View 1 (cartoon, rainbow, N blue to C red):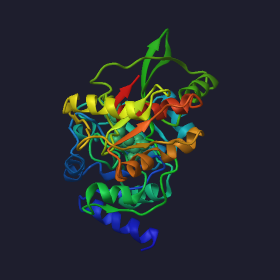
View 2: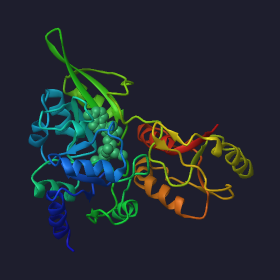
View 3: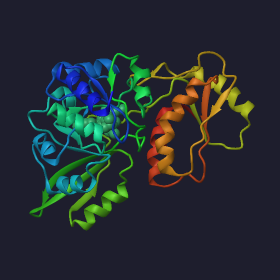
View 4: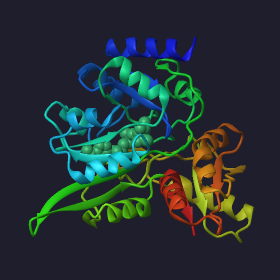
Length: 341
Ligand code: TXA
Ligand code: MG
């Protein structure tokens, strides 16, 4: 089937209130129409996702994003014009038309214009923005290929076939709040999730645009519901070994002592433990280039889980520093069942 035929078929499924695997430049999403209650319910059911975690709404133009918000500020406009289409999700005051199920009862909505022709054509064909979380079971590794999505949902979901996602980790999530200070509009920015749009790039743009702003740490669980301790977990335990002098036999011994003592669940996410004794470990070798490492991260975690080992080990390299590596480490530490220091 040609790409256009697949998109036409996917649009039909979405119009029939089904969910569809949608490629984007970050990771594959599981999409439904924002105005289809049934479709949105199917996203949560298919992913086994708790209702406290809101969905990102994907748009195909700035106008469409504006229609989803109650207040489109000058700051939002500058950020959107600079980074869209692209891997930045803006969390803004929601419009009435956005259902509380999408936003988990919050008064804000996460909006993103994906930089991927298939996603853009699908939104166009459906004629409505699409809500889409990453197309993985809740708490598990995100998909970067169509095959990952099919494996995850066992062919129960129609998936648009496209090349592997170019960026490989999910979008940066930025909350943008406005306040008036001395008769001037000021912005409170919070980075709710690190991604490939970097804090330094946002700083640079805000300064260049002469927008008054400050960074605020968002620790409020209600405001930043996606900041769970564990997420992105592969199907066998990932262990981060910070001590690069430790011997392999010692690592195996420690894992056999410690992994089974872990709780079964943390914040509703099932902890991954070995099926039996750990005898063999698979090492995660990421390229030194952070952009390449991000692109390969989830595919490597999935591949390593399918080999004969009982655990995956990652030893952080001293070469791996910088903002993009911080975004990768955010995923790795959340994906890890255990950190050995
Ligand atoms: O790159 C991406 O963002 C991918 C692709 C498919 O677009 N989507 C994605 O969706 O990663 P998901 O659902 O896996 O992660 C969305 C994150 C969650 O952590 C959620 O809590 C946060 O965005 N989020 C969404 N709406 C929010 C809101 N109104 N307030 C705070 N956080 C929000
Ligand atoms: Mg996700």
